Amino acid sequence: MPAKEWLEQWEQVKDKSVPPVDLNAYFEQSQIATARLDVMDIGPCSLPSGQVLVRDPFVYLVQREEKPYFCSVPAGTYRTEVCVVKPDGEGDCARYAAVRLRFSESRPVHFYEALIGDEDLSELDGDMYFGFNVDAGLGCICDKEVHQAFCDWWEQWHRENPGKEYYNDYFSPLFEKSYQEHPEYQRVDGDWINWQIPGTDYHLPVFQSGFGDGAYPVYWGFDENGNICQLVIFFIDIEQTYCEEE
Image (cartoon, rainbow, N blue to C red):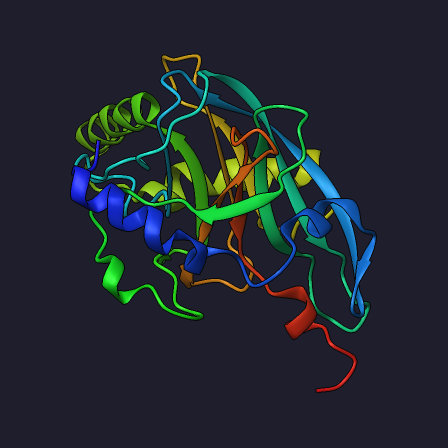
């Protein structure tokens, strides 16, 4: 848990961490601005401990020291839902504007940024957010226990496959297979996989990060009783990106 002083400061400033858009609308409306939307289910996400990380899977998740968010949710397996901006017919592909897990049927009435508990909260002001970094064009939602299993697999694969490249030799065929089996809202090389870590029952959903590399915020959704009911990754400001005027 974060230090008592940090938590006290968080209570004072957390209203500065709300998202700039209505994240409920991303999963409830069929159109925002000029963007036509759909919601796609990409399968289960395993949370055996209920302690959650959102990371770039091939750059940051491979580091064992990565920490989960300080809030936790009931352990379980949840469906992974993607808010998709449909292809525009002018050459752009489907874009993943947001990804969420729902921990209950309750509708969020407040969203606050998901944090680890060691951030410098004095920097939180206005449009600023902490978020997570993406350097490989992908994100994933991962549990603390799944994270360690992933690192075990990663280290073993590299030991057993000297001279091979993890993406081209292992993951690329999985993404291509995902496209072949679920072509809607994917490019031919694949834009998402629901990967079961070999030797485990853990499912790790991996997906494209909106417009690629960058830093993206993650939010907890709280219901009217103050309970966490959702986690949402915010990739694209649809209203701003797909407004009628340039």
